Image (cartoon, rainbow, N blue to C red):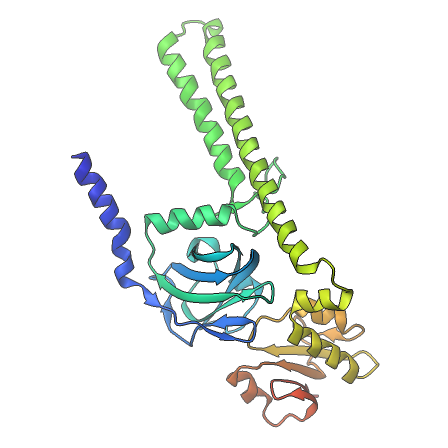
Length: 338
């Protein structure tokens, strides 16, 4: 009977792989992109990437949907990449609520400029094993320390399926306390209030042990996470001057384009917007183009449009607008509508 149950579980776990969609990634500059596709996010909740790199670093998985065709941080997931050739699992639907509708395209962007190669990728419904692998990878990953929200515990922690690990710890501690208390009540069968002392004491001790175990686990996780970040950033920035650090942080091409824009834009403050087919930090543009004002989140029509590797749709929107300054065919500045 147990053999049949285990066999059924394993069969169910692996059966989803037959429905996977192949993602033929291609490298373009420092990003790796899929072709334009139509992936049903509800039927394909899991993405698996096989990546080869020579050193540890951070990377980010981006996607665009039929509703929103901009690559931005809201539609992305950070993850850690280890040296060698390894597979990485993302139960995207549970990790990010922006995995909705039809997924049109995916990007994989390494944080560094090294020998980062996406060997293959698939999208599919996932299964028990990929879900466990995704949660384990997310817990030890670099997403950061998400608070539980309204909680007396303001300690930041790693998430699992986009929910703070603190929430799971609270439930575990509560269940341990309730289980030990109920077990002791059944055994002692108290008849007076004083008879409750022993069951309550044992349940409290069990809860304390559970709290201590959870604290040790979270401390190890936090120290591991920050040590990885330190190691990656040390390799990335140590021994470089400020210019090299900026180029490393934002990408050599993008940083060179921002410096070009800073030289070409008027000296007096103007509104500008950014058109790009690849993730380009608007925060970097805000910083390096001061005193000019980023108009991406305002109703103010931009005076200038910074164009950095535009999409075909963006090029159509720019038709008829005069080119103000050009670095090359993929990087130029257009005068916006007045």
